[in-house]
Amino acid sequence: MCPLPFLAAAVAASRTPLRLLGRGLAAMSAARRLKSVDYEVFGRVQGVCFRMYTEDEARKIGVVGWVKNTSKGTVTGQVQGPEEKVNSILE
Image 1 (tube, rainbow, N blue to C red):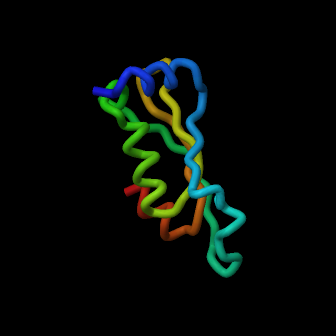
Image 2: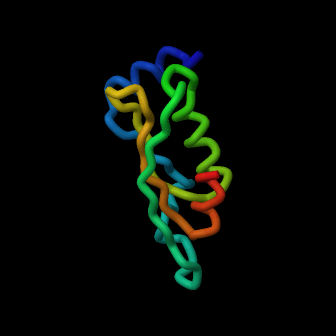
Image 3: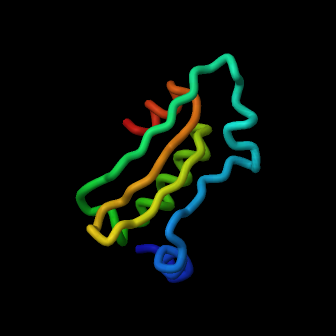
């Protein structure tokens, strides 16, 4: 179960930015092909800390973007970064 401060933040904030030590896409090599993907996840994804898990995985992999809960009970977001890293987090 998510701690209360995170639950309150989910209600108050429409998007949770994924930050990578303040570097973001500007620090990524121009030699790599960059990719941006909008996504929506269905199933039991609200109330199980899915957004926090997604943010942690994005940091580990090295991509940026945002993620939020929807009123339909799904989670939607956007992920950006080198193509191979974006493909990795989508799996």
